[in-house]
Image (cartoon, rainbow, N blue to C red; front, top):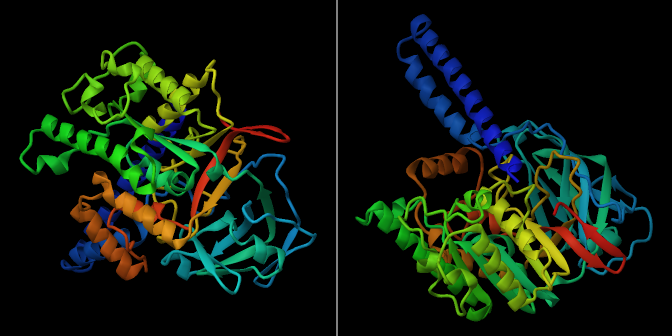
Length: 484
């Protein structure tokens, strides 16, 4: 389970090495310009270079935008033939859609010259509504558009696809994925940290017939904001953990989830990998000077096995998860995707749930994966709040993936934004460097701030779609199984 995390670290290491080389070359150019041309030229060039970097080269993109995404979709998906006639997408055979299918279109997208400085996007429209899905600047490769919600227009031949700062080029390929309406089932969302459930699945769980929210960690580390109040490091971490524990129980109430359907397990942030490696050994908090998880479990509406000794161990985590699954009996479990989301706590959250399910008398019908982080692109989903979500960059063709897209209307997006706004971890101001960078990008790169909040997750998460991946599903035609 450590491979995805190590790959992320390798990508970061390569990115930082390349950045150091670029800085060294830039420094040599500045020295040469001062010696050979004019003394005042180096500081001017340095300022201009820094502004250019912040505007156009500061994104953490760990691959070439000219690389093709490499998807391997489930073999049983429907693939009706389509063609692009001008800007209109035409289906070449009769197509019957219920309206809630996930529709994915593979098509080559090539950036224009302006698309190297302004974010290129593809606009989808049916004459009544429109969506836009944004991609990397300077792209020239295969990308996957999310056409979900435009099924009727597609069938009627009224769906138009138009590139802005880019061109879309055929031949296109269409995949149609059918799935049951998971909102009509009992749903349990596994959140490694408070706010992960809201970021990934607020739209799903707020509409579910019955929803449960299970948060694994208190998220107590990186509490510098609270140290500014005069608290010592451990005090600040404990305060932050208590606040995020409160958030994990209270914020789902905004979506109508009863308090007795929410559980905060109180394990310590970024300690899940160490717990997994030594299942019976307690792993204390890195910053809160705690080795007892019960401080962060006081709001739980019912006792759990880990309450007996409060030990932060992997065995206690498994026991807690088994007790919760047997209590809730969820038909759908929603948890991080272990191959797409590289956060170590997210990978371990997935592993813990799968291990807890082994031999358990209750099994979910469906397991859905989500990704709140990526290996390769820290800006994904690209674009603005309210835009659709195109499929993320994936370069491992050995993965068998089955996307599932849930549509959110504007009212649901606003409710999701308000839920995120209640999360204490998304409330502090960004550091000065990030605020300056965003101002430069708004001025020179045409990027828009989110109307809902300053934190980057308001832009990333409040969207036209919520995107999941079917990891396991019992269906009428058998069992679909992904990367469990």
